[in-house]
Length: 205
Image (cartoon, rainbow, N blue to C red; front, side):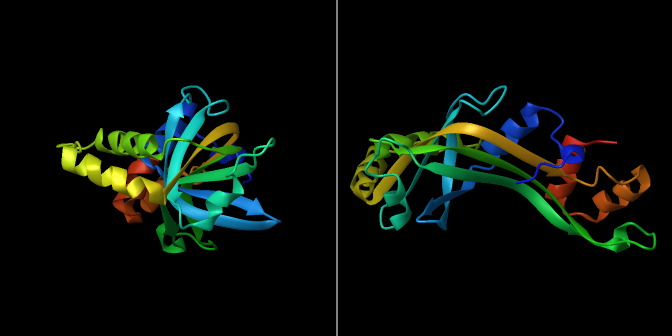
């Protein structure tokens, strides 16, 4: 992904917040030169406070999904993976600019983390940690009962878990920062609530 300098995140805290609050990621690998992608939950295991380089991620997918064969069984050289996290996005119509000539565009925010992927030996641990992470921001939050834990245990043989050791980070927060205050105000007015909130958070005016 090309990271436009003028659409850089204000600081790493915004990058970290996007990753942690949008954990339904796109996991992309390539086997024999053919890209394969799956939409799966991915959480931060460790690191990421000042940069995601050196951090580790945890994720899981259905074992019937053949993509996991790309990293299991483990080899001496772990395969590369691209994990894409994205936040609110939306089409921007030239009607919002109220000027002519004008062209449409798209406002969005995304983080790409590249790393080395490897099998994680305990899928149940990843499932439990993923649930705990996602429930931590909910009120009321849910905790698995003994019956639910038993159900988890029965499902685990059908789950393939993985860890990603992050080696590179890229991000784009394109939220009409290149427009003047009046035009950007109109874009925000016409945007849906999630995009407008992201504009206020990342580049308030």
